[in-house]
Image 1 (cartoon, rainbow, N blue to C red):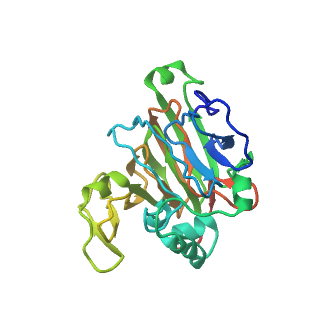
Image 2: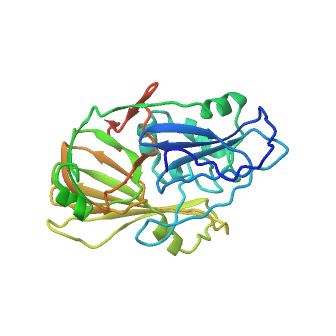
Image 3: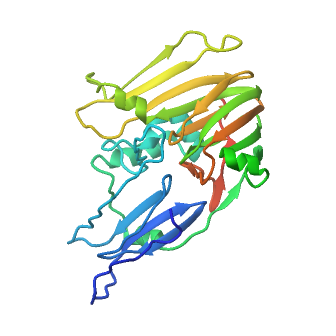
Length: 316
């Protein structure tokens, strides 16, 4: 997103009011809040985290959006953190064990949160929550279980001309990467040491599926595809479907074991989580790296601390 909302074409002779309408954006770990009113124009980039707050109870907030896709497929996908069933929260597509480790809370707590919201992405907030979203905050970062090295256009202009970034990750045994997605680049990763598994949520595959007609709310099954790649690597796939005629956002979860010699690809705009049962080393080639943003979906451990990699429970 451009760092500040651009205010143009404001209506003249506006009356001042203490009521709040706020757009809050999260970019590069920094949250910025801007008051908005009738006639305002603001711009957000692909991959930005966006919150909208309105304390008006008698007048609806109406926005008109012009969207331009940055993905290779040309499709535009929204990842909803709020919500529960309609639309489906992106968190519900991760396994419960992953969410417990990512948020460091028992399963029943986040299930209560998801079950509260059954219709729409808009939720009712208290005055304290509205005031908090309308203020500026600057989180800090910590990488306690990871050594990360990367080279990009700042190190070699040739990489900039190729729009390519090369990175090396060393991740300690038992660590889990917080769920995230990349706004622009696709990552090609080669595992050179260790083992673990990767889960990727694919909204595009879910769009191609027909809606589930089973009486249960979710249907899960695992399919093992034929052996692929060097060393007889097998890829396991888990899928989740949501019942009903609602045509909103859904996600298909793809899960695969990774070990030395595995090559896996994470497209842009696809939430991913990695769990490592041995010390893991990967070499990554990130295509379309310019202006990419890593958007973390769950990275909070303790007050004011953002954790990219953290310890997870055994058995994930």
